[in-house]
Length: 472
Image (cartoon, rainbow, N blue to C red; front, side, top):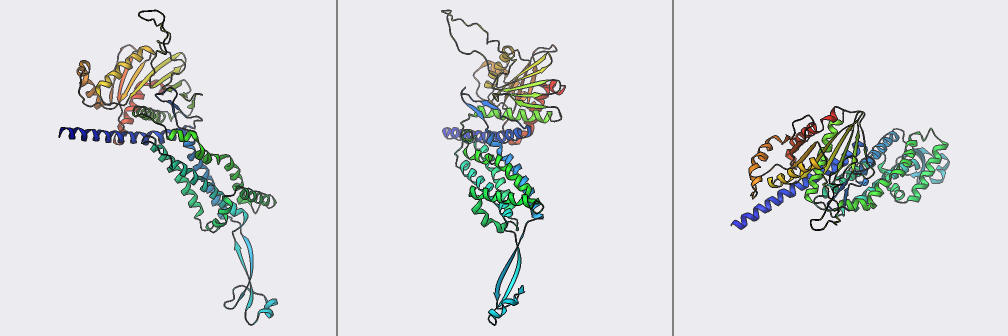
């Protein structure tokens, strides 16, 4: 029975962890993409993976569906404008009738057909013009390309961690496809679809049709006034159709969606994304805020009127040095000794520069609720204060739970870590002078029901560690 109980406990814990991983991924990837769009970043942040040669980077293509959505919204407005002044052609049709007479009787031909039938001429309006066919063909061209992209991405067998990113891209593509359908469902355009299908799949026919409409528009500008924007849109589309083509062919996108990311690394990304989202919510009031990323994509640079803030993820920004870089290393038996790098690498380093004044903050994220591991993280954070001469060192972890403890120091401090849990963590002032060193322990839990609390904790952390930003 005990073995069965242990198995159930393990299964329950594994299920809980999978739920946490899925939530972190569902929050992290869409939030990062939304931040990239909102901040108009030319490059995406490059996150170093555990392997020095492996990097986690959301490719540009992952956020391109948002741009494509904007393009289609423009097309939707063009369609609305065209429908108000839609081009029609007059069609004359001569037919023989033996019943109701609808149209003009052709008396010149009556003698030829009487008494069996009466020749009648009817006049009708048709919307099947080259310009209108070009309109529906343009929509269908985008529609078909989006479906091709969807098939390619849908076929990728992603991990639990990367599946939310895949799902988010598919969701945006589905929105684009739905918008195309909404446009084509208009009663005026729907009859043109059969003819347009043949053209939309043939680039030569599409090009010939566009050239004909462009030529007609130059000869009769007033008649084609509503279609001028369509022709302009097609020029714009040629530049941007690479968006959907890039999504279909992008090796970078495939590599990202198939990337293997560990649980601890995902928690780092989750906390870092929450940090960025909260920070930019605080800074959105600053109209003069300028945001950029360095050439390597590892350091985010925020420029305010009176200060500059550098935020690095698993990288060390210029101006921050480890005291171990220039340390001399000697062997205990022989002096001659060649060693590799000996320095720490915090998960996040923040450097704030205002004139000659500098402030350094280091942050480490630990995906654990074990007090023993949190204590070890605290030792590391204190070491960073010395090694990087930081002003503030932060440990972010999950709220601690009781585990078997086999270390005296952990046992003695267990109550401290459990008590501060009710306060979201604690700020520990080590030196009591004006520029004293500070250690912060913050609890962030990957749980959808605790996100409001997580954001409150993160906002408080930023307020208490980066207060100088708000005074810039």
